[in-house]
Image (tube, rainbow, N blue to C red):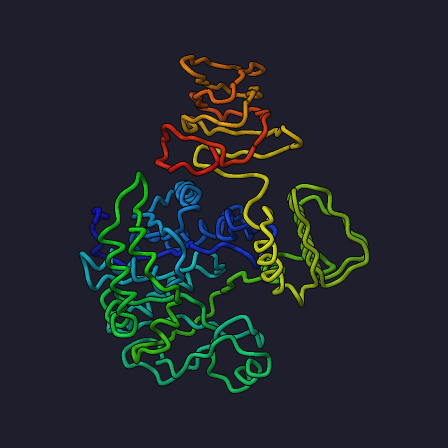
Length: 485
């Protein structure tokens, strides 16, 4: 296993960034899920999570676990808030939270079996960060004594989209922590109402605190196959630039299960600490309406939006003018390639709608027109029979792979910045308004040698223009022959 550094010391945040994003479609897509979006501030939810635990006296640098398709965006966002982290661990494919926690416990526990792991989803909002950190301090007492602590949220309504936790007796010597009496999977409305009326029930936040050894001990007891496969995935893993890759074959054998299902619902060591820190998992569009500042008519308006006679609405445009008249209690979200309109009370159904788009093979499920790559981004601005036009931005100092195309030729026109273009055995520097033609089959590469972004227009022509028409010969980012430049 690659050396990932010394782990002894304070609490180790383990940030889980494996979600694919369906409930907040069309803003959230499989290749750009909600944790990578700036939904409640100028920072993304992932960045907000990192900042929440950026307290060197309490916390070590975070260990972030993400899937392969998101790794470059995750790394870039971490650098954007000065939180490069202890490591970014790459899962070959998502396997839910129990294996992710096992991987983190195996890595951190290899050098300190009593390392405290604070397991945090990357897509939650907590408005009282100081209160949250104080709660973690309290929970740490119970965790060091051997408890597997989850954090409970006071239910504000009979919500059917959350699991519930029934509290038991207070734990001795652990400030406010209680034993878990029982877990309840997402209930129907009547059962949720009874939980609120009975009292002593908390929403299950999906955040946990435990030592590496204790979690692995309980996982070994209830899911020994998972514990072994995760151990093999770590020991057979390898470093890849800024990432640590789990062993593909070993991790493929892991069952996809949540921490609750695999361990917490079975162990006698489960404890809950009720907290009130302004928590939300941003599980559907109405959650963003709840979190945002509203105007005198109860509306949240983001982007180029105009209204007449609209009340209690969440209206957001990422591009086109959005005009709404005479509607109430509605969510409308417009992106460059899709528009969602749904009543706030039925917003949970957006998930099933997104899954239907996936089943149909619609590209709107998977990606935005603006596609992020480790070297920058591109956006298709026009396409038709045998042609496609893209706007490409290359970050300062970045370069695309050395590649060729079997079915298309390309023409690059520099809009701003400086391009270093290689075509065959020729390399030239191109300034604004200069261009170069790349014939079909020619080996080529695009680079930005300057300190400012490079912007250009690419015109493709040929009998096939799919992103999988790439033969990579060399790549700075260690990617296999996958699409995207």
